[in-house]
Length: 139
Image (cartoon, rainbow, N blue to C red; front, side):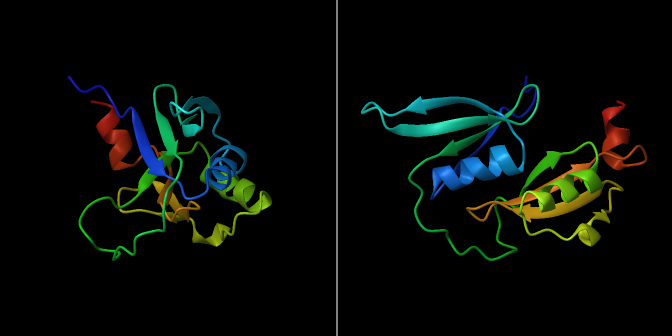
């Protein structure tokens, strides 16, 4: 039986830049690192919640130019407890964000989109009591 999402994996062009983004800017703690057989860094896990992670792999190439509505992966969504505070905190850490861009989605959750150094779209989402997600979690 599936019990949740274990991790989301990203191949990074510049692992140091990506680690700075996920740990310093987003505030996710580094969980552990794994090396190749030659001792060089292979990947880093950062923790996103009690049971889930993001894997950051090294040695990525150039970004693929993927049309916005292409089939396949669309974005990663991270829960936040207070979206206004989160967006203001990201701005204070140097991320180019516009707090006026926070909106309420069709499901009635508050949301804001950012992009990581490798072009991965990330939705920051605050669960709202009247949202479809909150309703579904009651079951």
